[in-house]
Image 1 (cartoon, rainbow, N blue to C red):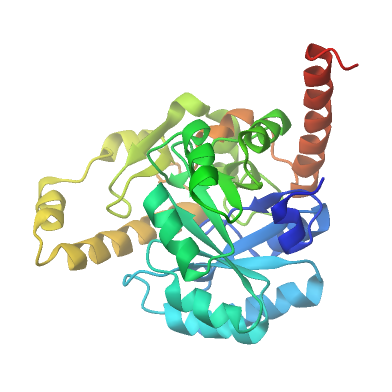
Image 2: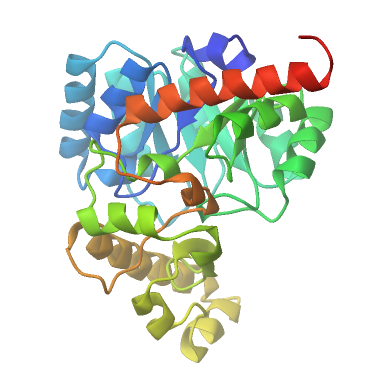
Length: 329
């Protein structure tokens, strides 16, 4: 299969394993490359720049396949510039930028021929990053896990294809081979898929988190603003039900005050990320686990290669069904 994304990254299938905070690790990136897709890891999954360098070296030692790093480019990430230049020095293949202006990342990456894809949730911002020189757009739709957009993929992908002249990668709501084909049929040049890869042997999260992805379904996904101040999808565990999904009065007031809103958001973001960190690595049921509605299709704890091979088989089956409907077989 050839699309703009496979050509840009030199991968077999047009899939990026989405960067997941405190989920994606070195083993997952290596396994994704071996399976024929491209993995992307959040720079924030490494606590220090030294650990980031060590992790990137390990990836490059274990695999020659393309991989990327996700950088949060707003002011809440005080390490963003150091992360950028360390990744440039280490020769990553691409960046995904989130939650801010990608201008510096794009400018510095172009000097080295490194690709930059930017998270967007609407048309105007997509056009803006294209004008800045982005190589592609990650169209974060309303079905995405973690931080999500407001527009369904069925509207967002065609709209961005009409508005922009760079590749569009759909992010959110897909967990089957037929779902992949449907996004490509909408005009997407590739997909960013995250949630289905949480419940894998390569994933570094707790067995409880993995099992929750098996046991819960799409109807158990709820949206909360408690983690980062922005809307974020999580599994509706008893603990989430207990603490609620809306900010309390103090948090809400802080975020509405124009003068201190920025600092309040930074505080909320920090508190939220620590909550996810605890959930990801402590074996307790009282936790906050990010996931999207595509966990509906997770029925066992498997492997990254196994999931990719399943997608291939499902895509072939869906294609044959479509051809039959069209009377071509």
